[in-house]
Length: 352
Image (cartoon, rainbow, N blue to C red):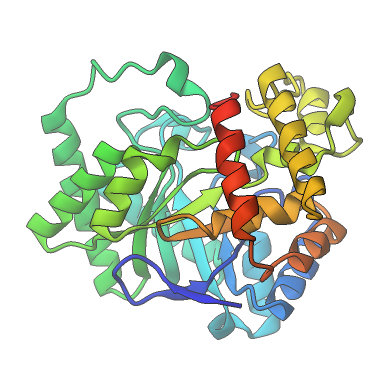
């Protein structure tokens, strides 16, 4: 497994990350532990979690459960030095702290809470899950309105939070810091304020990125390249769309869409399951088949061809799904298939 240095720092991780957001909901603790073991056997040492997990749906009563499950694995196995742990503080849009925005004091307390649940003395990458000022992630781009933002308040907030992150880093509680669901402007401002304060610079940005969702390709990628920030791409299979499991209107039992619908949701994968996205998915799957590729393996391999630093976050509710993902790792994407993917993207731009 290829190793990657996150940003311009000194935290080295595997080139593929295992996401754990379903541990404690769709994925049982025992199954989650088995997935970590299987990933580790395949050379995947980088684990991503968050204080708000599990998801689908997020419930107040399960906040922190995924970190606890990961922490129990760490405590039982004595393998802390073999893995890199990333977690996140929840932003104001989620059901933590009654939706209150985080500041420096809250960040400091949240770090201690995550350390306790993870049963470890350090977090390798600590991320800010959502910007306090708002975000266009998760289909909010269609109606995004930044006009109410105050640049002065935003910069003061960044300085306050970076002060807490700096203290935590000096205390050995965290090694590197990162962002999530952030914009190009936000990324550069976080870096600027960090430079001014001699505080930790953002090493990563965890944003959605897949063949079906390429908002990052322009401004985000440019900012990250120039600031030496690594993309941690979540939903590289577009929440399962690219797997083909939802083809022909199917709604497999236990799938993310089925669980969401059973919980009172729309079952549309957070706005991803649109007619345009279904059509694009079928086009990508046909292209993969025409080239003798599995569509899932193609989607992950394509990410590793991008002209910027990226670590895809793969996730699975069942271990057989993880086994299938692992089976395709390390297979280089042929140049003719990469070019065909670029052409297909022009035919199906931003399908959700």
